[in-house]
Amino acid sequence: MILLRLRSEDGANRLTRACVLALTDAVHHLTASQRPLVITGGHRFFSAGADLAEIAALTGPDAYRFSQMGQALMNAIEQFPAPVYAAIEGYCMGGGLDLALACHGRVASPAAVFGHRGAVLGLITGWGGTQRLPRLVGMGLPCASDLSMRSPATRSRKQSNGSQPDISHRLLEIPPRRRDSRVQT
Image 1 (tube, rainbow, N blue to C red):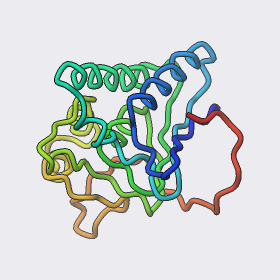
Image 2: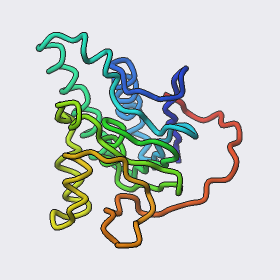
Image 3: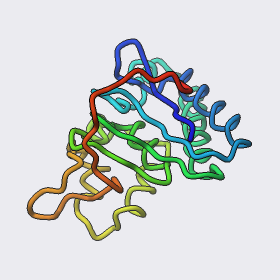
């Protein structure tokens, strides 16, 4: 197993252009190993998603290229020859949710929060999350469209009324953090 850890100075693990390129390169490089991958973030954030300040500064053609970069990353993860899992603790938002949905499986702590704030901001994801989410949880669940269109933050635990989409395969109690010296991106 190979661990890829999203890490940024502020801990939000935003998917900047540089981060998306580095992750894509790492996934392509690791394809030959055919070993399972686990993608994880930090205690507070798996990933806050794309850097909206960076996106706001892009020209139309640059924004289109950024969308293509994100799609290339998500497709590389989805088509990886060995299992790829997202280990999620904390917030998993926007492009971070797209990243988790591209993985073959997801493991979430009870503290995990899922959401796609882009819809509230008038943005539609260009990385495939709106297609992957209904395939994962089904179109019949109102929360599938809520998560992608109205964008409430969604806890990993199902609500008592059962209406919560179950996008993680398993909930885990995450033990206290320990230092990790494996592959980091």
